[in-house]
Amino acid sequence: MKNSKRFHRFRSFFFFIFSIALLGGCAIKAKKEPSTLANLKVLSYNIHHANPPSKPHLIDIDAIVGVIKSADVDLIGLQEVDNGTARSGHKNQAKLIADKLGYQYRYFKAIDHDGGEYGLAILSRLSIDTSVLVQLPQKVVAEKRILAAVQLTVGGQPVIFATTHLDATRDHANRQVQIEHIVDYFKSEKKAVILCGDLNAVPDSKVIQTLDNAFRRSCVEGCEHTVPQIQPRRTIDYIAVKNANWTVVSHHVIAETYASDHRPVKAIFEL
Image 1 (tube, rainbow, N blue to C red):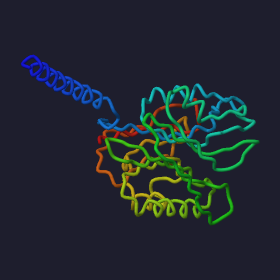
Image 2 (cartoon, helix red, strand yellow):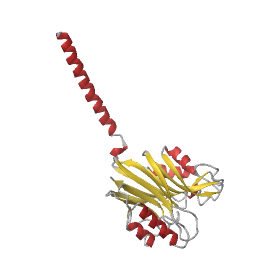
Image 3 (cartoon, one colour):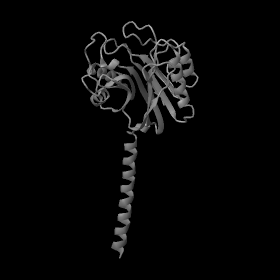
Image 4 (cartoon, rainbow, N blue to C red):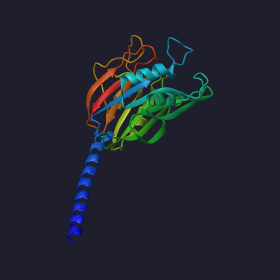
């Protein structure tokens, strides 16, 4: 009988120690999860369908991959991405880039083009939960434009990451109604939102003033220019946030002159 009691006490002690070890193992594992992310690194890049301007008939996916890899970021918004077009060898460019980098991705079609599609893409080191495509309005007839967005978990909280490419015509009317539509789309959103993209508008334009009424840009004064890629003269590519009091650790336009006709924009936020 005494031996039986000693056995039960030993067994209880063993399971107690095992439980502590198991809980300790879970705690160690949790430290490695994305919820412990301290800084969030974001890139916005108009990739010109991976066509280097100096080589009109070349598609150089590896050049785009190299730029992104060197940037070492968590979230990427890409504009001017081909999917299945003849000019790009009928390839899914978003998938090619994501696979080479080991990122998750979502592709968003804006228009049919050259036997395939043309639009936006989002790449992420973090798990993508959901995605949505929003058609943007027009005042004058022009190429259709869209807003692309995904939801993911950053620092234990849901975050929306979105990218867009606003109208490129000389008339500002389309860009204005499009940015107004985007601002209105996120008006009631409570989650943190990161918006990036090629807005085809300079900082002192009404378009960017409308953006600033709802979002906080990663750079407001003395920002580096983003186009053209050689001796850039204008800033039209941006990263902005709302519903987040994150500190901007850095904002930087990467001095890349070969891969695209835009320079990529990188921002780091302290969560």
